[in-house]
Image (cartoon, rainbow, N blue to C red; front, side, top):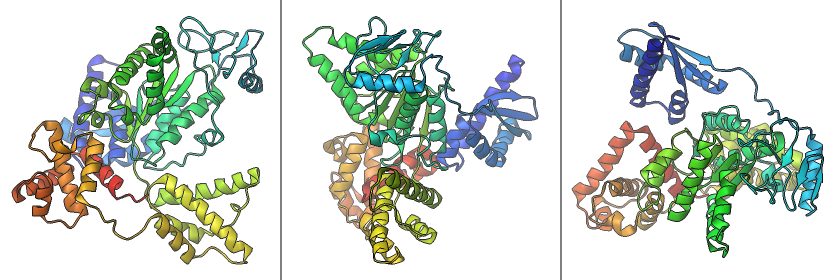
Length: 526
């Protein structure tokens, strides 16, 4: 392709993205559009490419709006073409090992029993799980396969691919219920799992609690352990990562810190969940970014999840600085939105079928009853948005249905209304200004004295405006009462905060999503 034409395509596409950001485009759709690359512009047609079929479908639906922006940017009508950069299926990765999956499973069982053995170039370490290792890139090379073990030396990690608990082992891609609200994160996670897309590094998934972030992270780990054990995948919550660092620093052996650094810097896939909980641990953050940079320089995969976008991790008194948050945002960042009715119905049907299948396979009594399609639709109408709570709701309905069947009855409308009312009370939650302030302080990581004080630092203005706006939205307090609770601010100052939030929400979709997430967190009774 002519370099000039390629450059024109890139420039035009950047202009279009800028114009789209000013339109009322749903955040998930905008993220899909931004993930595309401009590949060609011939003066009449701009071609962009994506390697996700779902993204291609959704972007084609947005084509009229995108072409409006194209015409505005190019000062002439321009047709949009959305191409797939590949068409191959997500096939299991070839591990280039002579060991069969059953041989690996048997070796893992031996390892877990604390037995060390060595046969035909396969080493099993005490207490470890067999995982094929190879060249410096962590991939199997040639036909000889060696396991990563706790006794490995040199530039090799002593971590092993861990055996997941029964509950975690069920968190697979096959069991993940995908819809418009989470499809981009789902597709990106699959491509990271099979090593198909090296540009998704780091992959950062964010969204409020209970929407399936941990499921996707565990699905990546499960896929790798099952399909390509030559890649060493380590999953940690931020709390576990902090504990690893603290324990190493407390160790009397001077080399403990260096050993831990070597171990983390020589994994193939590092997954950190709930990274927002690391934001006050300054030294752990420094250790994490040393690890991050080392892994990135070797082309190793990093996957992160949080309850907020990377840019929000550095707000308030957080120890994450702009350099660090921008590094986390340097790959692909995708959000998971709360489920709508269609996805909730899909989730309920999925949980219902899975629970019955698992109950039959594992001989669990009380979860094999039948619930009619109509009643499941009612369950979707009456359920909240927290997926974990929805799962518990389905289980309770199944248990109730089982009890009804024993009496010769069926689960009915009144039963579902009663159970849903217990899970998600319909009455207005009574909130105090203090509760709202505490929630905002926790979300933005600011002190109460700063939130209600007179400081006008840039990092304090947004949380203060948002707290005042939420107080007006969620309580019956007058503007004067609100002002008193926020350091004696005047009626006019309170009105300014409310106006600022409403105006910014219209101009900034990311900010709007942030405020809605915080509001949901406060009002979510689950």
